[in-house]
Length: 165
Image (cartoon, rainbow, N blue to C red; front, side, top):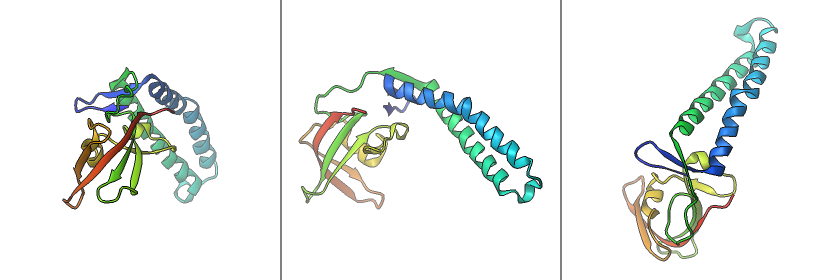
């Protein structure tokens, strides 16, 4: 999954289905559950001093924000194929890099939108400094990117494989 500057988000069919299922749950059963929590807390009395009520309302706000985010994301999504295993870094690939000057200091991450983050591997956006620095590079090539302090860091691309969930 990746985002382009035209506000289009490319998703694999699997990622699209996963996000759509989350949206359907949050829009249906989860809304009913939170409404019941709010109603139960409301019945306890004075709302100004009711911690359960305020917690439920806060949870409801977070849930509705996620519904809006998912709705917007899925409206702008284009479903496509996973990237080919060509050794070229592209969104949807798990990339392993070595930091310049220390070949033992490596990092493996998924180059993808945060919406596709998984607990299996750290995720970096293609728009992040590191993501934009390595995107399009081939295995064995060096890449550089700007750090937040203004310095430039260099890395070597060790591996780039399509993400398998």
